[in-house]
Amino acid sequence: MISYFKRIWDGFIGTIKGMMVTLRYLVKPSITLSYPLTKFMPYERFRGVLLYDQATCIGCGICAKSCPSKCITLENMKSPEGRRIAKAAWYAVDLGKCNFCRLCEEACPTKPKSVWHSLDYEAVFFSRSEMVRVWKPGDPWAGRCWDCEKKALDACRSQIPMVEAPARR
Image (cartoon, rainbow, N blue to C red; front, side, top):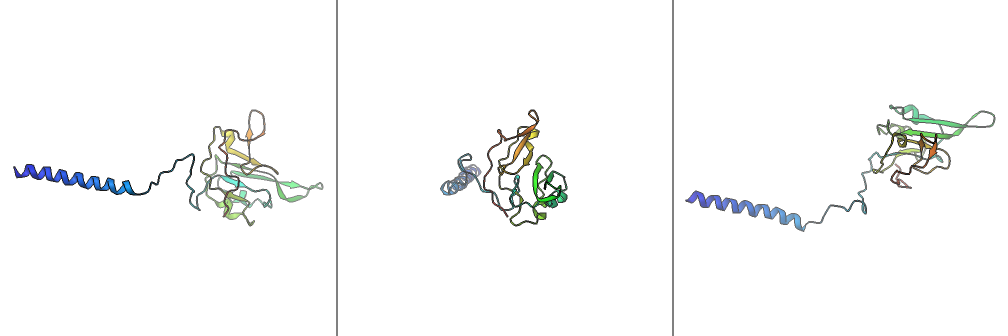
């Protein structure tokens, strides 16, 4: 008979302990965000989509040489005499090959960096051609995608818009 009441008492104490945990978390502030409306800011060392700035690039090609996956290609501008100018005529990154190692960013000699990983974590690609980003003078931060059907550069329509002024390191 005593063991019966002891089991009832132990069950009651266990229920009270569980309810205390529930009540303790009930009064704490919520950490859940309403995702599309408010977003978490990633950590400083987060490696998002690779971005490029034509204005600061000197066309040295060190970023392409330091990339272990060979996903960066660029071509320098040429003067009318055929000499190389210290600006890139076009710059391309294949984000499908990029392993986000950040060696290109560390190798870049310009201040601020002309190639860097953004804090954007919402990059979505619906086709393989959208993973190849090409920048030419006057293009936006996100670059343009190569459209295989049109055989031309086109704005990435299906891409969620990226932050226009990303944080640089």
